[in-house]
Length: 434
Image 1 (tube, one colour):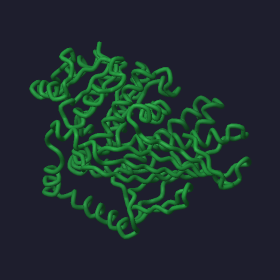
Image 2 (cartoon, rainbow, N blue to C red):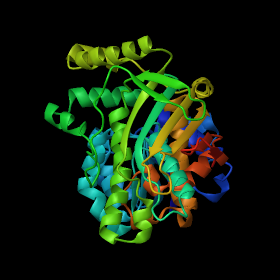
Image 3 (cartoon, one colour):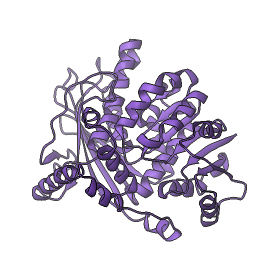
Image 4 (cartoon, helix red, strand yellow):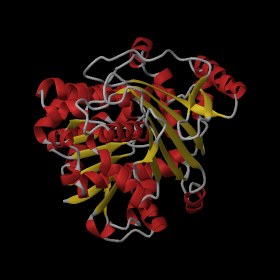
């Protein structure tokens, strides 16, 4: 049996996942296998990355369930990079859920996540399979930022009768990198293959949550928030992946709410986020550029309903992998800032603000997302005793619920992510918690 299986290893993302795992400081603690459609490309990958000759190599067609299940049954962790997941992901998740194998992917497709929740969540809880979609740029930073903020609020109010709860949480993103094939494929699938009514349904609040919560603010031309650490106002426009990220964050919120409602335990009640309203945006330098971004996306989404436009967009993005490309992807950056505000309480009559930042160097989609995915898989394999309690039940979970503090520590220690959290209480006193 192999510890970690990278599915789709010869694609741009799969190659980066394999490259990262092969050079990981803990590589002696796990065995690695790679799988893809072409034996020739797999052999080229082994040569390019100087992979050990002992590595297990498998040719597989992800549309053939029997092939997929035979492959998956021989692994402990499956890292699935084969997208769009709405088209190709279900057989892999089904095989993992049936056989108690843990699963991680990079999807930004909430329709796919809803589908696997409905089909495989119950089975996975019976087999102990931990299924964690959306462990890349979509939607791990957003989800983990809220998790960190909630933990900071709970730590601050640990001696209070009632723990602090979240009122609002807003995340801003600043990304520098290439437009990834994965994002392009997700857009093309959404506008070209999914019925309009189903696509519209996927945009509603709490689409992935087992519990309904307070409604989110409607989309708008310009977004803004104030940073409690500096009192600086940041502005931005609509973020094209905000609906996918919000759905994952709201699922984390809903799983904690559901756990509190069904177990009625004191600890579960304390872990709840509270009646949170969540939103996010893409950070810009000015009001003008913020509005321009939002209008550009609005026009772009409208044009995507036209098949000639979808054909043209499908020609964009990276088509090949190479050693030179590996180096190029190390440039770029990810900067995420989340500001979470608490509800007033008897112990804290003035709202407490938590500012969480997540920063890293590298292309967000092609370099950092594979790192996040790889570390998520290694967390499930090597740090299972330290995972959050809900992870041990199995099922379709989220990065925050399945991985929690473990993935934060792994990204800091092994991937050199800069993750910080600063709490500013109602009196204006600031304290750093990470």
